[in-house]
Amino acid sequence: MHRNVLTASVAAGILTTVFLLASRVGLAQATPAPQDVPDRGPFKPVAELEMLMEAQESHLHGMEDALKTPGEKAFKVVRFHAQVLAELANVNRFHRDKADYVSWATQLRDTALELAGKAAQGSDADTGAMLGLVEKLKSTCTACHDVYD
Image (cartoon, rainbow, N blue to C red):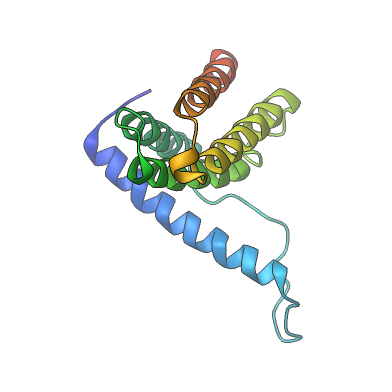
């Protein structure tokens, strides 16, 4: 995987857009849709898989960096990165029609959500548990990339 600043900036921009759109979709699903809303059709990812992977990696590194200096501010950063990573992993589930790939993307999503939940505990958050979940995220990525990279 590549780690370069320009790519991370582009990925962060794409990620922010995806997160905002996903938030709007989530809100739209929570309330009944007006009659005049056109059929949205099935969900279809639009970002290139490589960009999605780089964005996921960027958020993973963001969590690792934040946890180097634990505290409430760092935990807010971790929560942000974990929630966005979870949504990216959720989108990633639709990029390949392979059971193992979907399973790894689902595991990545669920682990990121678990991490976001721990980070949301603020001053009561368990840094060790969060670091363990970051390692689990990394292991999930490695397992998938051993097959699909």
